[in-house]
Image 1 (cartoon, one colour):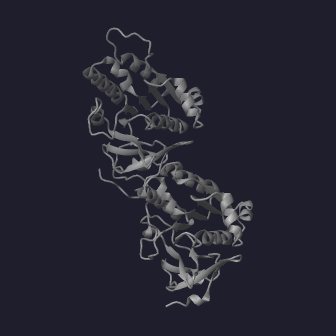
Image 2: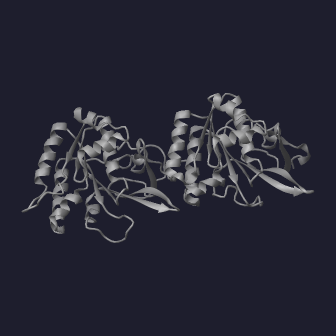
Image 3: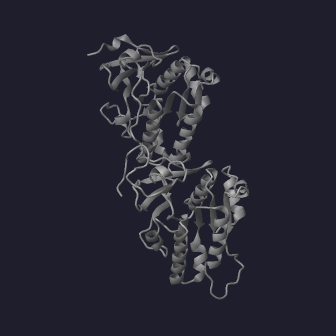
Length: 483
């Protein structure tokens, strides 16, 4: 099926019944959930999150009242409960309420195998447990670990086929994990499972620029539309979280009323100030005053009683407070008011998904009306130029959908205003662009400002001088009027 970039609920043209996973973002990629009464295969190498994904599927289903059974051939049941507790999941409570059952089928290392053996005994135990719980969902974790003991590929395949037939006969919805290097073009012994399963999900993790990122891709889904792109995902303290790029749906709120910039004279140059729900960029080389401009805006909107979230990728809170004392901006007082939340992180400290999820969590808990990102040029250190674009596009889209006004800074080395304004190809989603320069005149540097773009506004087209003093930023009238 082809990629769908539509927004909203699952496509009603596809009538195959589905069961939601309740995992953030995954149901969006799956266009509603995994196939009901069929097998979904999770294939991936070590550390890609196969067991975690299947466990969370059962856990969140149990929370919604849908009983499930976990059959594990690799992990001890005590280990699974311990892993789940790290995410705040109480599996024992769900087991006591007959919403979840864990069946360990792990062969002890010291066991001596003799004669033929198969899955009949395990399936009999599984059948009894499914019946007693009234379960409709099963997660079978790593059956390949058990079946390799047969030491015969033909017998292994026969047992897998028998298990699949058993699941189909009972109309059970199954997730099954299997080891496999999805990055390799070579075949592995369990390739045939991908033909057998109704839905196939490949998981892997890669290291790029010394940053590791997990990725997920839906390879096939019989009878349903699905999103074909590859999606980075993260395992957070709350479980798996996927934020699909292709669901950046342009469901943006319209630009709203004027907002004060906090800089005398700048509002007139912009054609009325920043617009609510807009995204504005202040771009310039080092020392041109970018941070002072965004902090002036922060002071202005906080003075109106509105919350602002400040994401900083270049300096600490103490350093920022100290720097802003010189232009007379008291950020400490803004923080004490409870209307300012500051978050600082090194871009290379984690992957883009972790950075993005952290930002989304802050937005959800703090509920800001405004967001500052200082500076987007540092986002390239999250792994690559594309990683920076990915992070910023989804963050801006999220803000525009929620009606959050965003103000970004960007450090540039070029003095050519015709260069791509953000350096990360974000021009189309930015509503206002202010370019700052330091220009040498008469043995001194003069700060210059120009409004390169202000969407839907009659803005100044002149280059204006400005100064930064103990009173803040002043736009000088000698800069000239508009054309």
